[in-house]
Image (cartoon, rainbow, N blue to C red; front, side):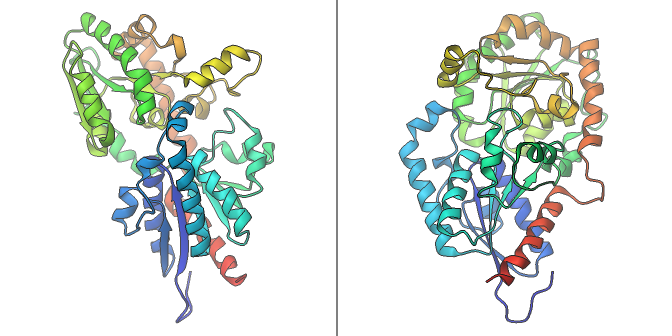
Amino acid sequence: MSEEAGERPFHVFIVVGEESGDQLGARLMRALRNRCSSVTFSGTAGPRMQAGGMESLFPLSDIAVMGLTAVLGRLPTIIRRVHQTVDAAVAADPDLMVIIDSPDFTHAVAKRVRKAAPHIPIVDYVSPSVWAWRPGRAKRMAAYVDHLLGILPFEPQVHQELGGPPCSYVGHPLIERLDELRPAPEERGKPGTVPPVLLVLPGSRTSEVGRLLEPFQETVERLYREKPDLEVLLPTVPHLADHVRNEAARWSMPVTVTTGETEKFSAFRRAHAALAASGTVTLELAIAGVPIAVCYKLDWFYRRLKQIHRFIPIVKTASMVLPNIILGRNVVPEFLDDEVNATRLAPLLADLLDDTPARAEQVKAFEEIEEKMVLDNGESPSERAARIVCDMLEPSRDAD
């Protein structure tokens, strides 16, 4: 895209609410700079986006919470940050606003910006999981989202069927990182011939870790009694590292706690199986070829709602696990609420750590995922996303 001499740079206002959005935002910023001759950024940012030269209105730790209990505890701060972000966006009057993931925060901002400044085009990068629950959100989004960048291949069809905004599949960011996730021949020994390596991944949010770490500990300790040569790796995020290390120090076996993406992916390339919270990490594990047992414990409020309204299905799909949804069949076992216990999980993980049919079934199925997700023209996900954003920037300037 060319720029006339003397014309001001394009201004893109980006709103992210947690680490996953920061990663996508940083790659999108690089791709937009490569595609646009001149572009500036403002909004909310994490460390990766800040390293790319963008200042943040406030620390993302103020709003990066999950679950109703955690949200209620920080609600005044979150509300204040929503209004602060809206005021900053309206004052900046950007050529385009991009909201990335974290829908509870980013969509609250987008709705208010659309009302206060309806001329600002809004792009949503990462769809809320309308395909899993609360499908009515798709149609409501069409009122304030001009274009949706989907990272899962089935999302354009889902939004078309549900009356959502125009949606383009831009590819999952993990497609750009296959070499970091796939093990070299010497990195992962053949199961049964080397000491087994188990990944324990209780989540990236305080609320998730609080609900899952204890049953995960009980599961691993039972497994360790059967496999005393078991190596346990527990990758975590920096803001939870001290808490997780303190908790892991109480476990009855050695646990290696690591932080940082480089160490996490190194652990993925070595691991034979994983015990993981539901989320994007399950797709990372699948691409890395690591068989998984996936767990999720609902916030207390939703557990109570489920008990009171058993006739109301909260989850609309046959699975909450991304590899299962992409594959179209339930290959990865998942455990919800009271099912998350050592009695059920330990025997399954023992099978997944060894050279068994249960392990082979997952590994073989995971080989299909890249074929379903790779883009057909050689573009990276961030390049395709940047192309769509740039195509929207030109008309937005012409309308000024």
